[in-house]
Structures are given as C-alpha cells and as structure tokens.
Image (tube, rainbow, N blue to C red; front, side, top):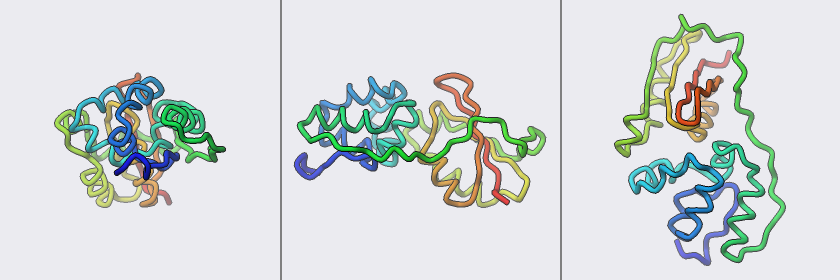
Length: 175
C-alpha cells in the first residue's frame, strides 16, 4: 500500500500503518506497550493484520482519537474529529459465570509465540459450545478482534485481567 493512499482512521489495521509508515512503530508501541510484541515479524503479520487502531486503543486503554491524531500528525495528515463510540467490554464478574461450567480451555500464548493466529480455532470451538457451557481463553494481551468476532456470533464475554500479560476471557452463548 502506498503512503499517499493510506489515510489513518480508527478502522486502519496496525499492520498497514507499520508497513506504510515504519517510523510510526515506536509511537504506536509507546501508546500501546503490549504491541512491543509486534516487532516480531510473524506476530505483526498475524495479530497486526486483524487489529484496527480502534481495537489497539482499547487494548492500550487510550483514547482512540488521541492515538489516531498523534499518528496522523507525525506523518503530516490533518487531525480530525474521531467518533469515540466504543464497543463495551465486560470486566465485571457476571452472574452467568460458574467455574464448574467451563467446558473448554484454550491457552493461545504458545500459538501466538509461534506466529499462529488463534481466531479460527476459537471460532470453531465456540460453534461447538452448548447453551450454558463456558469457554475459557487464556491470552498474553486483550484479544479485542477475537472478542468482537465472538460477539458477532452471539456470544457474551467476561474479561478477567490478571496482569498486563495475562488475560482470561470467558465466553457463553447469549440467550
């Protein structure tokens, strides 16, 4: 993608930005430290290709408008008003959660370290889940694109953040 063709917006993929404007990599990592892992070319091609700036801002707990406009400013694009209506992510322990109902656990840390992308596996697993069964995903960062995809399939979630490098995400079919 040519630099002149890439206009940075909340929907722009992180991979596309870093490929078109390598000089923005350090700024993006400064805003979203979890993206330090994207220096690994394999992870950049997997996680970076599915993660938008909107999702990156959520992962880094930063305002998407500030992030987008900072990146735009660095490359000489005009700042613009950014709609910050964001998807709601649930960090509150829900009434539906019961550890005894967790039927599948998938730890994606090794997959990601090997440059594999877990979305297909998680979606396949979720499609097999029965009502009232809970699926547990273990990840080294908040997998916002994956949560969004599961939500589009009528799953609700709960995020339990242990620390900056350990997240437990629980999914259950929405009734």
